[in-house]
Image 1 (cartoon, rainbow, N blue to C red):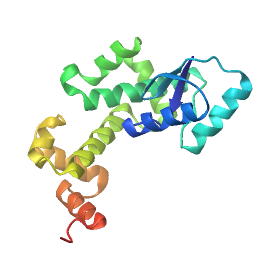
Image 2 (cartoon, rainbow, N blue to C red; image 1 turned 45 degrees about the horizontal axis):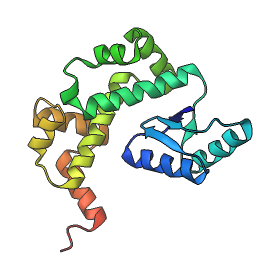
Image 3 (cartoon, rainbow, N blue to C red; image 1 turned 180 degrees about the vertical axis):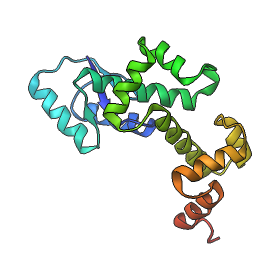
Length: 184
């Protein structure tokens, strides 16, 4: 049985949903961003219990087709952002191919449900990826710009500042201060 789940945005979410499914006494066949395949077929009582467990972890099971499309779009955008070497096409072409429908339909439904465009969502996901890479402390900002698909450090910095209110360097300093890394 396939379950479409809202709120899954990273591998930690995949792990959390897997734990929820197992704690409900179910057998996960596969858990990926935005969906879980379980071996069992659930009755209404079991689905209600699963919904409650998912909700306690910040996730929601999706039932209507437009919400499913929005979650599939988010999953495809995240994949496009995080796996740029797999798709050299622009985002709209990739979404049309992955979701098998016209981009204008995908875009209209996404914007109506999310209150922002797919492009704004893509920018936010790229900046989140940059934040994650900055947090690891293993790459320079120039290397991060290159690996995340920015044309230059200046482009990354402008977009980062527009979305977060600070430059990547300022963000790194503030996160180091918050986590106490500068107290050595």
